[in-house]
Image (cartoon, rainbow, N blue to C red; front, side):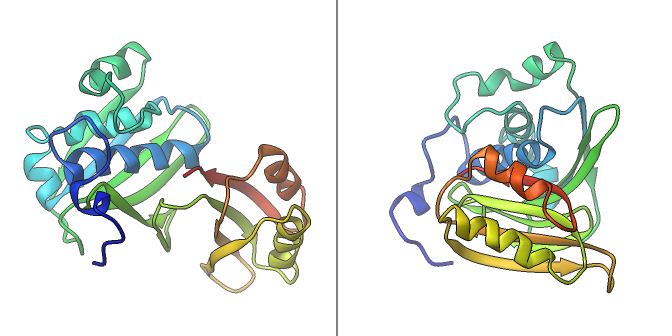
Length: 220
């Protein structure tokens, strides 16, 4: 991979011991929380390969819990995240999964509450950096390094235009955009990385736009 600064090599300011297994795991957990829109009540976390073999010794377990609780990578409470999760009635189950994956630092998070749930696959690629590669069965490539908007919508003419018009009206520039659908005319996912964090009032405007079902954001 290409490095853009020394911090890509040594990792972010964090509670250790590992930028890949701890800081990256925290960011995966926090991305799942952000996409769910609130703190979940339960989480089933499948860990693969290196994550599955070393998650207790390298702090991947408490890091993922910390992310689900909304902690940053340098939060001093990180080491106590599992205990804090219990105090907040967040039930977390870790599953050592033997299925094959493309990257050794892969986690599949299924999180939810009494009414809703989401399923997300994240990988920690080194230096605290992550990629989100799947959301609710949709394949995507989301770095988490930039603010992003994820829009569930009907695969209909005008759905994309209704969103981009709102972004243009609020002078929000699109850095990267991709659209994935399960079938023609069915449910689709729009992923838009932007240059600045998007206010909630803009998201609310999108939620009532034509053919839009659900809107979530990831803050950089």
